[in-house]
Length: 531
Image: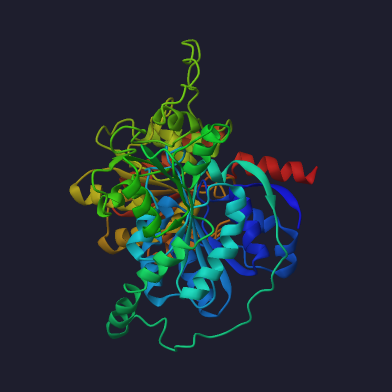
């Protein structure tokens, strides 16, 4: 046993290594990226050859993790909350197939949308799938949740979700580690039909999954991650979930706090403890990070006249991440928000890096579209989305990963010309290929721009599965070879690049333009390592 300083993501990864995991599968997405990055640099993981490369997207990662679980090994799929949308099909169905080796789905939510499109709460997915969910309240619990989660998964033969949030994923604390366990031996499911979801089997599996909820509730009631601390003052009870419990403790740890507290870090909700606090207290304040998931569920418990407080009634903010100050205000404790920000302090919006290749790509696109007022540029998720901001003002949309090509296709089908899709190289292999296939099949008139900076730039420069294969894939999908154009986005080649865009806009068919120049940040890292 030793104590080490770790991010929440890193604590989760270290816990998995120490708990005998055989493979991590994931796609980079803030705030979950550091889980696999930690493993990729970990000496023990390298020596044991634990699987730790990135998958093409979250769906393939989830399916690969299920495959490793089928083989009896302990495994983890990692993603951010919107990545769970991509993995939803195998995720939901994995609740029906169940697990053989321990299977954990680690999902990092991003309340306040620091780097995301929405404030989605992944606990809803766990409840939807009818599987257990563990929501650690601190870094030590992140570490311990993996040991417990694998045991829970193998006991009930179900996948287990571990839900993190940005503030927990990206803050550090001392973590006491345990003795490392051996990996599971290769073993096949006892039931040869366990992973077969033909309807006849699925109906039988669902008939077993629903009654299992009573046992999962009992496991929550006995869980070391849930605890009930009684108090003599029943005018108010507190249900504090995950990170919300940490915020509560920051406020009341040094006070003579007399109200009952129910800490919830494992779901489904521990019914007996919830019913106890609802029955005994006049009011119950729910402190939870994300959506009012528990607050809404409480309405289904027998509560008499107990008033439920939280995000829905305005006791806590309805949107954005919580903090200790919000909790203090909800408890009627002194306001600790501090002074207002002075007027002379202005926000500094994010910007493309100096020397970024995307800058020259956008300048060429803008000039090529100068005489076409009805032209539109459909973009995607990546650092290149910053092309929306001044001084470029180069793109019109950003929906989700892969949507640039499909939205451009829909716009082209509606009659917009020119319709241009801008997508990153990593994002193209994540979820852009199928959209381009649709365009080729329908013989759309549009231009697809695949910005090739040789990395997954937005999340810090990770490898991706399709590196060096863009032209071959586009040709294989049916794009005519003479309309797959590679350009170098540099100021000295600006006019030449503009001409390429003009030629492909004039072509009545599917064109692919690939501006290729390495990300300046990854290039700096390479040069630094060489020195």
